[in-house]
View 1 (cartoon, helix red, strand yellow):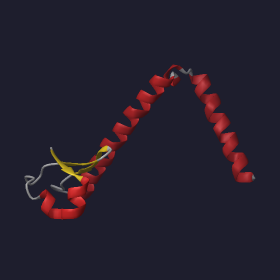
View 2 (view 1 turned 90 degrees about the vertical axis):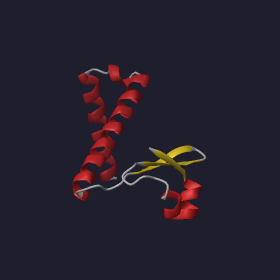
View 3 (view 1 turned 120 degrees about the vertical axis):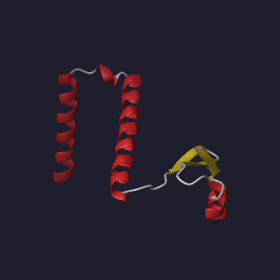
View 4 (view 1 turned 180 degrees about the vertical axis):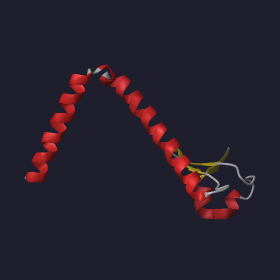
Amino acid sequence: MRHVSLRAFRTLGAKALEAVPKGETILLSGQQGPAYFLVPVLGDVALEDRELRRAMAKASLRESWRVAEASGLSQMSDEEIQREVDHARIARGRRKAG
């Protein structure tokens, strides 16, 4: 995977990518660190889009699990979870009615 600065990509556009071999993923990074992946399309766009969305969903789920474990929420019982869901539904109903 090649790294390209966001600044170079913004100012040079496609020229900033010329040294990258065809088919290789590019990581765009800014002052705050990694920002975006540029992923080449190699075949069926719809299939690759689904696969990319699935990978992003899995990454999001792993991050949610990490946050839950760090905050202790992963230790909640089924009953505690159901109470939280019920409270959220009641609050949402109040917002819609109000």
